[in-house]
Amino acid sequence: MPHWVIVVDHDRGEGESLAPVARFDGTREEARRRLYETACTHRFSTSLRERRREVFRQDDDAYYVEIRGALGTYRLRYCLAERVWSSEEPPPVPRSTSAGLPDPGEPAPRYWSAPDQ
Image 1 (cartoon, rainbow, N blue to C red):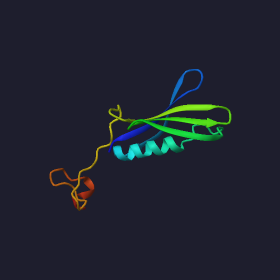
Image 2: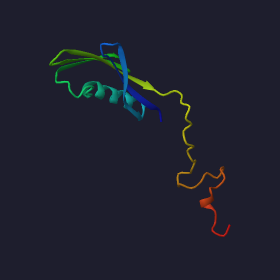
Image 3: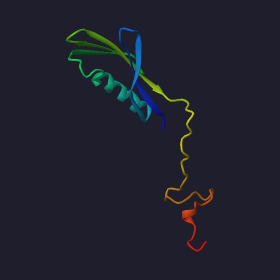
Image 4: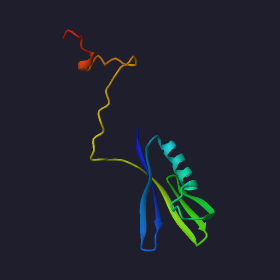
């Protein structure tokens, strides 16, 4: 299953800042739904007293958000990214039949051997 990250991009006055908001596994449809929910509800600052939030879709994988707070307006961009490569190898997935038994084409694991072997 694909691995996703939602990233928020915002201007902190000293240049842009990227920060991961969430990492998860899921389908593209699930990831896009989660991106939309994050753009509508994420609190990027605990001290922000939000008065108004506007969410604009830039494309299927990005939203532009303006949040009007007590002290000013904040402009954010929430983006979705799919992992396409990692230096860490995922653990091998054991193959099995629908009954949960080892695949006949694969050698049986030690725990499937008869007790007297």
